[in-house]
Length: 89
Image (cartoon, rainbow, N blue to C red; front, side, top):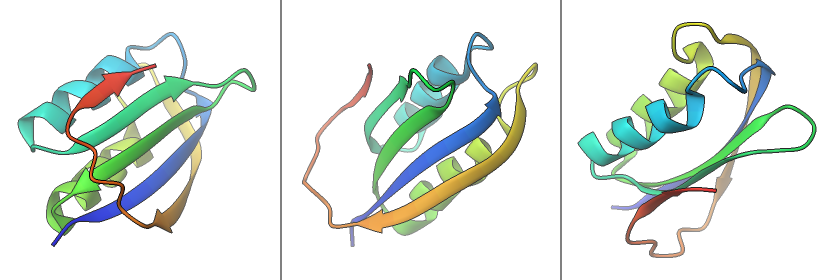
């Protein structure tokens, strides 16, 4: 079963290797989607894959890599779009 979650990460999350850290974890867990910096200082990501793997990535977003200070993560459930790779935007 494939699920899709969108996460918007608030706090000090840009310039701390957040996107690449998410990409590497997504590759290691066979999750598809994308991650990008937004102009408002947030990081936004979409994860599609097995429920456990997607939840692991959302959990990582709540902590972030070393140097990040996550204030909150807004998560929404969406319909999967059958993505087949993970990209950094």
